[in-house]
Length: 438
Image 1 (cartoon, rainbow, N blue to C red):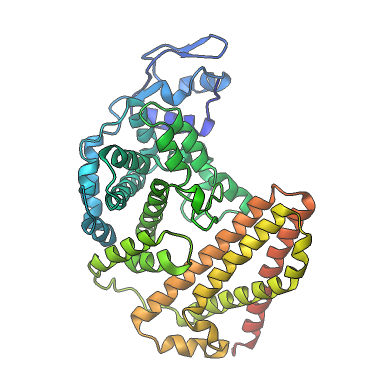
Image 2: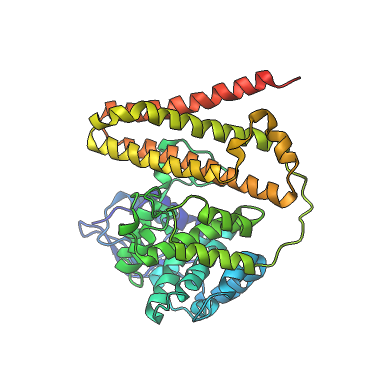
């Protein structure tokens, strides 16, 4: 028996205002009540009835979107994306084996999967572009491994469907630019799990695709989500999808995607397999350099402030580690494992920051050092700062979420460590402000 997810059903109802959606078979409750006959419309009038009962099968497997997404359109979308994103073109043009676009051409999808993708794509215009882009990158990276046609199709479908779990999450948590507290972020991190469950039970998808989708936000060093899987728990197909999703996100998020990708892939050792780092670096080199966008010069003072804050955070965490390491032998195993893993992650972030040489620059000389840099050097420094700051923020969220499984006392200890680090940053910022001439 299965409940109908209200967020998913709301997306279906919204789509029903512009598309016909019908039951592909009789929809029956667990108690034998026929809720909708085969061919009946699924729209706002059916919403409450479907939410009231548990169903014999998932609703997704008993409905179809009439005239939904046509898979033959994926090729045209892929070609538009290749023209739009130089990095995508660079990666797709430097691979071996089957053309990534041909992997999308004439792709056959089950009615259920086609309907699910139709509901997903209806959320916003960019959703289908994102899905096709990830599928295209998955096919390109998979071609380097000389996968057989069946595995290539599996990667493409996983790429198309990787984010369908978002349909089952409160949309308020998914808006672009929305800042989420760790407790809210926890809901977002469940979307690979939900998507995997939906796809695992769906005709035309199944267990293999579900297992790949489950890990598309995992990292080899164990600080991805939702499960924190490490290298031994990640298949090569799962790693391919994780890299493809990350790259597509970079291309969609702003300027200098090729430079950002080249930096992000190798910045913190242990996140990605060396094979993919080399492959993306090769693709970034093949991508034509974009013309200047005419944007304003970077704000040197603002960048200096962000770098100083990053340096302060890393310095404080190293002090914190030195202070509490002697007591860690008394920690319970789950807490010891989490804190040890976090410190190792933070040390790699610190090493990545040190590779810029900026940690050796006195704070009162930082602006002058940046001002003496060339434009491309400043771009790279800005990319490094953003990438490392994102990883620190992500680490904070993951520590908060994972510590919820501990005893109240151990969870409080993790929160105190985080709060202490954040307070050191506030104090440093106030000191810097007080010392700045008016």
